[in-house]
Structures are given as C-alpha cells and as structure tokens.
Length: 153
Image (cartoon, rainbow, N blue to C red; front, side, top):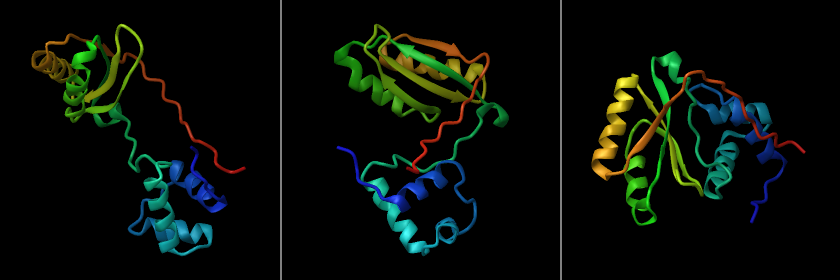
C-alpha cells in the first residue's frame, strides 16, 4: 500500500535526493528554503523514514576518487544456505547492496575495497567461511547515472 504524502513532503523529497544541505543545521536550511520551520521538516523526514518512503539518508561516494575499487559478485547459493550466506555478506563492511534473483546465480552484491587484491581476499574469506564459491566480476569501466524520483506533480 502506497503511503500518502502531500506537496510539502514531495518538495522535501525532491531536495534531499540531490541537494541535501551540508551545513551544521540542514533541517533549518531546508525549512528556510521551503518556508516552514526546522522542526516541521525534521518531523516530516522522520515520518517518511518510519513509513518506509525514505529507506536511508546517506552520502553517495565515488569509490575510485577515494582510491577504492568496486566489484560485482555473484554466487549460486542453495536455498537451505541462503539465510546464513546473506548474513555473511551483510557482515562485510564493503558491501554497498545485495539482492536475490531467480537465477542459477541467485545472490548478487557489490563490494568496495581498497584494492583488487583486498577485494579478492575478502571474497576468498567469504568462500572459506561459507563453502560457497563467489564470482568476482570487477568493474573495468564505470558508467554512473544519476537517478532522482521527481516528486512534484
């Protein structure tokens, strides 16, 4: 069921997707832009998080500019091992996201590491702990797109 949001919620979502203020009091800045008080913006963002409209608020870094590498990983995980394997993947600090697909390679995740060697070692450790072989598909060229969900109607 879709969560009901009003025009102010939409305006907040439009701004925080691409232009979240990097200032000591970001909600006050947002309130100033939107013509409402800081507390109103904060309460609305909190409610949007509670309702699941906002999954998380976080920075999105460009790994190569920070000296890191990324790799896409895939594994064939038996159904009876899925939960424990995914828990192991989730425990890795360099995993940005993971998901299950209806395919022979049913678990996919992206791993960020300081070097290709570090990524390979992390993947080898995962395989050692779980007994499940993981494909390491390092990025050769990165094509980044910027996705915003335009909320104004």
